[in-house]
Length: 565
Image (cartoon, rainbow, N blue to C red; front, side, top):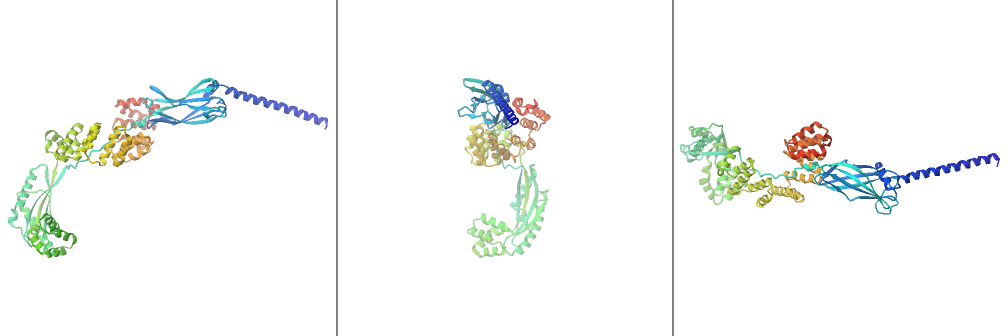
């Protein structure tokens, strides 16, 4: 080996040794810094500002009576001491107190306990937090309090605020529920008729003078006079209907019935000459009167009437019917004597409209002469009066006088609306267990706080009102989408529909459904405006809602309006 080569190798060895020493020195320096960073609980406390925290949701929300969130904490590299234990306690601080969870425990890599390990290289830990809501938490915040433990030392870590809260919008749900009144069958206009008739001899269309003076015609004339004298009654039209008895040929009887309609019209003019009728007159020829025949036979005491009616049902051809009936010779003689003469006729029918009591008249009669009202009028009167005490008395009258099952049920609804649940149950115990009963029992259970029982009743009822009531339970249980679906087709004013749309973030539908001019709806409209960034809408609607002092107090603390204060 040459001297020159030896000198080169020697120089490279010297350079290598120097570089090796430099690397060792640098590694020691880095290790030293890490040791300094994690060498004590105090250092972990000092470096806590490097720890980041995220919360989902970012704004705390109360759902079904609980505040729940997912908290993620990211510990950076070189933060967590290998032999340290960190105790982290989630705390909700609110007006009037604070609520703590059991702490989460974390350990460094060299700790042999069974806590979650956070490596020195850093990591993110995610935890679920849950608190029972108590009044006052509508204005609160969530924080994490930490304590580092190392050997015999314990050092508090600076508290980290996680999220503000809590949103309690779902608590605006109307929890009363609704029980429907059973409807009355009261008629504002009652259709009536007044009727008289003239009889013809067999195969004749001549009107006999004696028929114009018959008891039937006299009663018809008296009825017309009574109608004209009664301000509540009006003849709207009159029908003249002519017939032939169903004996003889069909063609012959059709012609005969037609001639009778003509002579009957002339006779009607004579009958009403001094009893004028200011209404259209309709003239009709029926032909063979099989319907009248069937009716008279059914009402008669003829021995074989069931057999005759059976023949009518078996055969539709008039000729066959007549033949089969004539074959019953003994019976036919009775028919010819007692039934057929009554079918050779023309009827005069006055069609009358009776104008019933108006709502104002019903209210007055409740006070002055309640005994003149029938069951339907009492039920309508009770629906008209607004005072629950008055409703109660009218329903009791209907129960006393007519043993009205509908009044008995409606009385229970009055008690429910008064929140007199004991009397409501007693009243419901006396009525049929139909869908209305199931729904009403559900409303009682709902008001008593037994939501599970209420849900069963509403499901058993299965009607639209019960469906809307069950949506209340869905909202209370945090099933907002289910509630919105049930309320989508609800009719009338219902703040719960608007609320369900707000809770499912369907703000356009919420706005469209908010039609009631009440403080609660104004408040909900203010929430919609706040979520849409409409400051003027918030201001206007909160001013309208503030007519309700409870809502005004709520607005002052409601996190929905935090950015508008």
